[in-house]
Image (cartoon, rainbow, N blue to C red; front, side, top):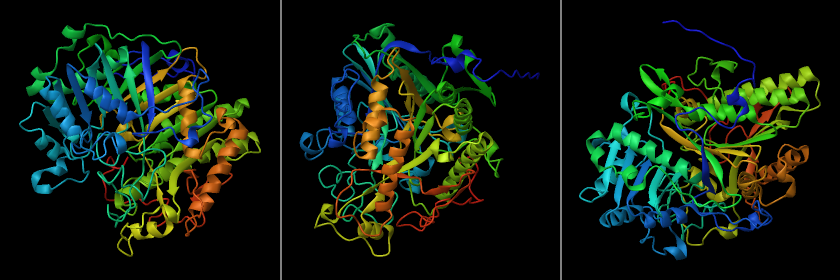
Length: 622
């Protein structure tokens, strides 16, 4: 074997200066991308003032309503790939489906299959959910989902993750169907399972109308449907139309042929029926260039297009597609003003940590961000990075796995802030590291009047009982999104950790998109809607996220909310702000320490900075 390396100046390659990425699925012009926050977002007061590109008032699209309509409209085929699919969950709630009976996912799919639609379901087989082991560690419902469709016309493939099946997962979440003679695809962070239905009000205790059917709580031991609180869920998803929607379909077909080879004949002959084109009626100002990205290898899918194989690499004899990671790097290097990230995890670039450098999380996203920040500092240009993550990983925050993930996250933050702090010192700037990089996390706090009188009390001494007294709870961030300069967006299923970015661990999918020639198009509108929902309303200053005025305004709002949230007594008046500064103290030289009063997360005994277990496999929590 002969190996050669070539080093090029940063910014000198076409990949770094172009929005287009050499990848297995090429960029597609003439697409349409619809961006959703949360499963069902109504027109809330916080959106007042947010405008669409044409100046009209913003009306948020409703993901599960649109998905329900698309499923109903499917005539030829309907393909679902999921980490978890719960047949009992309803897509519509409240007045649209008062008893949650007409829109249950399982019943909908059986109905469509009976109508003659080819319904295929590709779900991850959690190896810990075998009959003799019970529901499984992850609660994905895979065994009961497969059993539900037994004897129906719905075809289910419950598939494992090859040699890494006990550690890694099939994490893609896609729905693909025909609609009006074209292919329409949905992809993003939201699984079709329990606990995902939510909107930006994130009710904690008064959930009887919309959330009682699938009450979900995985962070506060002692909670129940009778007592609350429920776990609020923030997520991002997308609908893709036009030529790139065909690539999401191709991904499903490539996985099905590899992982359900004995059921290959059930695939609908889309090419014969629909031909090569995917028509899209062009609407002025709405046409996108979109590109489908993946983290996946030939252990999990076929790669039938031989002319695209040069975009892949090999590892242990397997072909690997790591285009999600490469798209993140490309977009970070192209950024000129700001980056806004929302992700379930944020850890990596372990080679740059002060210790634990052998940790198996070496992807370069955190280091690329720091390099970009410092280049802008040296050029004397304004630049800002906002990173929204959950307060702590889903699950009991005192558990070994959660504490280890928090520890890796702490080391990632420390490495980033230390390098930024060093640059500030060497350049002699009168600034601090958090003027360039701000970690944020959402938490919801309610007023005593918002708790229903008939709600039972949780068992005393549990985190749920503490939450009843303080009426606060973290909002779980499950998003996997990055916005760059309000011009480019990446939405998908990939977390910012090695598992998602590697290409040989968890299987992931994403889409990146931009609207050529539109500096303030729909990406800008969507990012503004996220700021409005997180920060309690619209503010004109949010239009320029890199400006000092915006940074200071965001800091002011989140610190005010933090001061309220950390009190033991709930507020008398309701606040619509959700974001808090992530509870660490960052020194002028970038050192990351415990924030006084936040040694543990509120209503828990879990240390904020985490702790390495020394027992878990290194590739499990990274």
